[in-house]
Length: 554
Image (cartoon, rainbow, N blue to C red; front, side, top):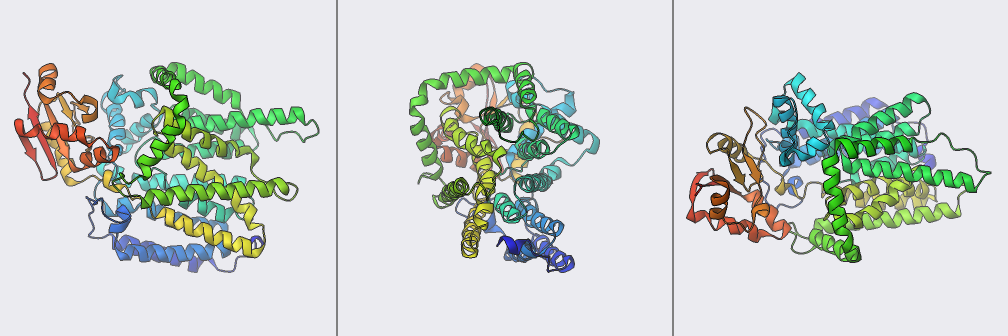
């Protein structure tokens, strides 16, 4: 298999480009006339289950071109082919959904909108994330000021840019650590198996890519590369705290282990340049204590409060697993189980790859510098289940699944042809099955004309006091919104009348998406608690999917 991958390229670029272009054109044409705004929970594979046959024909044509190119095309042609398939799959939301697919996008853009409108980010709970980590939002505000984009269209097509940027970073990362033999297979596996990627408008949409580029720069020699790595790390530090923890931990652990190794084994060849772990640590500490002091204080207090439950970590992990894969999951058990099986299989293959390396160290090399990126997420996942109730669970899996192929794909492809072929077929099958779950939860994230109309109504037709409930777009257009948003889970069990007595007049929003979220969390009773009070108060708005109840202060 390795020899075959290194053969001279046998297919000229033009036929492969044409095949990819034809497939892409079929996908785009198939989207004409489609306006998906609601996705039933019962729809198989979520958004993918609602896409027309023409789209999948186009994907099939591009995939055929990619498979041929993976073994016969030049590096440039191969990458462009992979980019076309990857971006088309992740960009299917932009092709087929009329409005930005994830309501989180509106929430995050609202922070940038606030910077554009007022020149700063207010220090209040609604903007605490952006206030403590303003890097991404300030950058987006600069773009918004210069380009003045249509907000809805910008948020709708943003995933296309984010997906392309991330794939470039993944490719450079894989190419840095995997030798010529097997890097293409490792790249395709790492890119397409990662259904945990997030490309909606948010700091995490670029956090992973920037984190990977930091490692790419660190592996290159020269002051310019090290300076670029430091600049990228500084931006990441002020933008996305979750990603920076994984990157910083991996860099620090690598440097510590490297120094210990060279002290113990004095005959070992000198390290090929040290990474600026100390400088990274200083940047992170300074920002945590000065720029994000409020966030750091709250986080520290929360973590210290959870330490007493360390003995219950196994139960916390089990609870997270049952919540995601149990029969109470509103999407069923099939899709979570596919993902779980994929993780377990990759873990097993990685273990096999490492064992093969241990017994063949003179013949096989592995990317030792990023071993921490393999083990740190494995440790972080159970800790996250205990301390953060699964909020960064997916980020740990993301790194785990991205790095794992680097340790087993090249190793297994070096074995006998039959072993390499069977490995390729097995991994390809599991990657395709896992990729099919990419949008299975999309019912929870769709925006619609009704949700946009509800946002307009709440910002224009009711007193700008507070609105409780509802997952709907922030009004990032026009004059924006000025009321306070609260969730049912935050005000429960305060009744509507008690709220009116203490806080004055306010509105309550009920919709299908919010109800789905509360069902998924297993706290539907909190949604029903307020819905049952609707008949005792005034319903002032109903567009078929979103209803507004107004309660006067007492």
